Image (tube, rainbow, N blue to C red; front, side, top):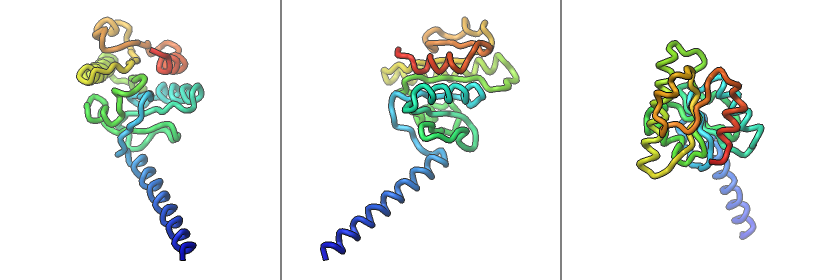
Length: 184
C-alpha cells in the first residue's frame, strides 16, 4: 500500500513538473512573460548590430541573461539566456516587463535602415530619458549605452540620461558588448 502510494505521488510530481515547464515555454514564446532576474543586459530595438552584440556577450559570458525589447511578433533569437519582451520601449510598462531598473546595463540601438537619422536618434534619447526618470523615482541607476547615428546629436542629449554613446559607424559589436559587461 505504501509502495503504491509512493509511486502515485512520484508520478503526480513528475506530471506537475512537466506541466510547469510547458507553461513556462508557452509564456516565453507568447512574449507575455515578465523578466524578474537581476544584473542582466537589456537590448532595445532589434537590429543586425543588436544580434552581433548579443552573440558577442554570450560568447564572452555564457551565463549572462539578455532581455530584448522590440515590436516584432516573435522572439528574434532562440537561446536559453535570451528573453523577449514585445512592445513599445518608450512605455514604462514595457520597460518594467524587462526589469530595466535591475539591469546591469541597457543598450539602445538604432534600427538597421532608419528613414530619418534625427528621428531615430531622438527615439533612442527619448527611451534613455524614460529609463532614467524611472530610475530616479526608484533610486536606482542602470548603466545606459546608446547607439547614435549622427555625432552632432551627442551634444543635444542630456548628459545625465546616457552613460556611454557609441557612434554607429565605429567598430560596434565588440565595443558595445565590452561596455555592457564592464563594471560600473
